[in-house]
Length: 238
Image (tube, rainbow, N blue to C red; front, top):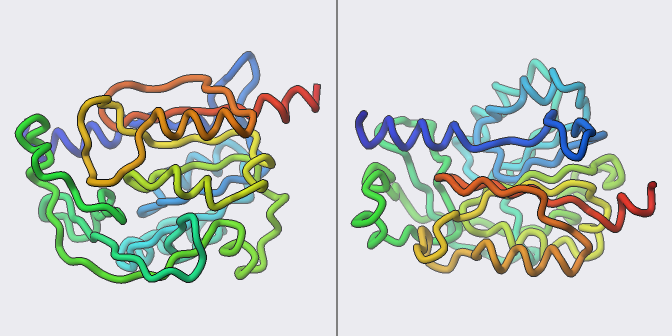
């Protein structure tokens, strides 16, 4: 298997919890916010699970164009925006491409890739930084309000933004407490920084605990994904 094939395979194996059974109950959200939507690979499965209210937010302009095409059969909302912890801040963004695939910018980030990681994780050699662009950030609540979306319509948040996931939830303020489930990509390598400046899984875990979230499961393979349950919200509903 080539380095590129390995990277693609590992990326595709990242677990998604929508539709799975947690504590004896299937996760079927009333609405999903997917930040770092790339090209909407999960759109069909979201629809098959029975979730009609989905908003995709993607920062990379080229990926956004493909995202719109891919999710159009499911009538899901697409927004081209960079979500972070502050509004209206010009932000350097690293547009990365996987191998020679024109539309594969799934490893793009507000942080540069730590190129020294290639010696330990050689498949990152096929991730190329095409250019640095400047984007203007928004917090998630501001983004939803600007597009006329009702914040109460969503209770599942999915984050896949290559190291800036903590900054996104920090920018949500008290709105974070309205989420019943938060699924986030995390760097599963405790001692290896993939992006310079990225948040660690421990940083994210500590912050989520302050808002009443409990870690349900974490996938420790490449492309780690963690699911948090809003225990405070679930206790109040029981």
